[in-house]
Each structure stands twice: as structure tokens, then as C-alpha cells.
Length: 243
Image 1 (cartoon, rainbow, N blue to C red):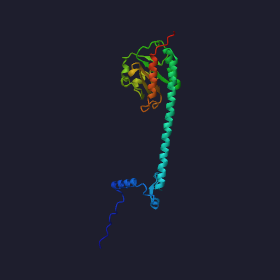
Image 2 (cartoon, rainbow, N blue to C red):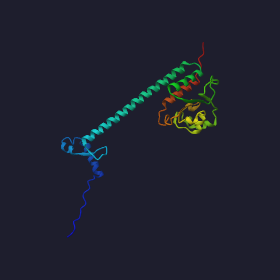
Image 3 (cartoon, rainbow, N blue to C red):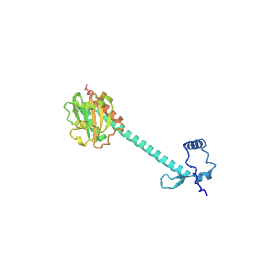
Image 4 (spheres, helix red, strand yellow):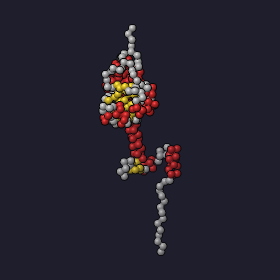
């Protein structure tokens, strides 16, 4: 007697072509299940939690809609939070501009910049590095202002920053950190570097944070550019002359 042979069963795994055909058909005929409620009720899908259970197609659709709703709410909340943060920054920059307009002397304007950076922008450590003489600032008593020659060797490491003419945020080189903040170099985790003047022709503003992620390369630098423009304009704005 010949032993029975086990015939291979047909595979139930659909081919890619079949998948495509089914997707195309259901896309073209979204009403397919409307008159097939009994079929719809029998369809079961693996539960998205991966616990081995199954849910109906309708339940899965509800789960998808709920998840999309949560994602939409999160995106909306993020947009609203960003809008509020941008409004607050715009208000602080506006307040700095008003302070600078109200002061006649360049020393007074620098004091206004210092006050704004500390009180409004919570900058605990910063320096305004100037590469040329500014009338009225030679005798200013503040550690926030430093003068260096435009051909200072340490400035070479900022050439790409000056060439771009745009602020840059993130971690800085050890040599840059030691040059900009020699009194407390080890506490600098990240920094914002803002060129002053056209392509850094006046120098730069450096704001430091102990947090390595506080100033990061992905953050917007638009408000930093505005601060840099205000400082640059205030440095060479002529003092008012009494009639």
C-alpha cells in the first residue's frame, strides 16, 4: 500500500500584487462594506497593543481616529506654546529697543543692554567682544565689554561665524570658551554667538549657559539676530547734542 502523501496547503499570505489590487479596489469603492454589515462584523484585526487579542475593524478605526485626534491636539498645543513664547520674546526685544532709544550716551546704552540680557533674557554669563574703538566706551566700568584687536589670533576661530553674518548656537570649542569666558570656562555648557555689525565687523556678542542643551543648533536664532542688530546700531549711534 502506498503511503498517503501530504499535499502542501495553499499559502494564505497575499502577494504584493493582491495587496495592491485590494487597496485600489477599496479606495475606488469606499461604500463596499455599507451593504455587507455581516461581513464587516466578522472582520477581526490584531490589537494594536500587541497583547494577542483582536478587535473589530470598526474598533480599530476608532482607535486610529482617537490617536490622530491626540496627535492633532499635541501639534496644536505646540503651535500655541511656540506662539506665546515668540510673543514674549518680541515684547522683550521691543522693551530693549525702547531702553536704547531713551538713552543718549553709549555707556548708558551698554548698561541698558546688560540690564535687558540679565533681567529679560536671564543671561547669567555674557560678553560683548569689540574689535575696534567705540567713542565713549574707553573708560566704561563693566566686565561685559572687552576690546581686542581685529587681527587677534583667537578671532580666527570665529571666521566662519563672521562670514555667515548669522548667530550660531550650540557647544563651542574649548579654545573659544577659554577666550570668551576666561574667568569661568568650565561652567560653560553651550553658547549663543551673535556677530555684531556687517559680518562681525564690530565684534560679537556671546551668551553662555551651563546647560549643554540650552543653546542648541536646532533652535531659532531670529531673536538673537534682532538683539545683535540693536546692539550694533546703539554702539555707533551719535549722542544727542543739546541746542
